[in-house]
Length: 152
Image 1 (tube, rainbow, N blue to C red):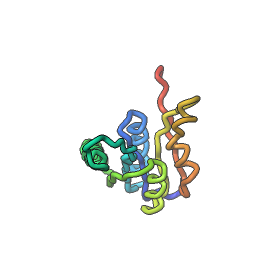
Image 2 (spheres, one colour):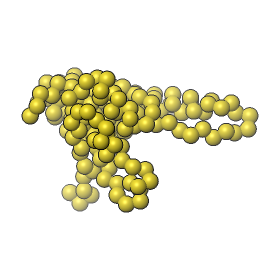
Image 3 (cartoon, rainbow, N blue to C red):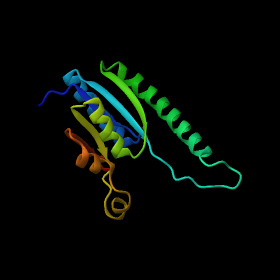
């Protein structure tokens, strides 16, 4: 395997992303690598309401989502600190795939470990896939972790 010294693992705190995190922790342990966890708070479309200044609720939304992500990261890092993995966390704002790729390039990571939710059919056509876009745009290798089958 190629030298892995820095790993980026996007986390949305769903079960599949936590499974990807487990894989990223194992790779980090085996390679004495640093693990960077990122959570992206996606933008919302503002809806104007009479008498409410534009952007007021949006800023509250970002602050609440950012605080919730930091709290969830605290739980994750506490659990994995005993695993002997050097862990950092970042909360970003923007379109998830674009921010993940931008952060990977900025941090010069060796690999991205990301969950795929396995969307098919109309949902994938409408919403797209963050993992798929990261694979297409990333300049570093991307390891995708599929959603586990229900009957396993």
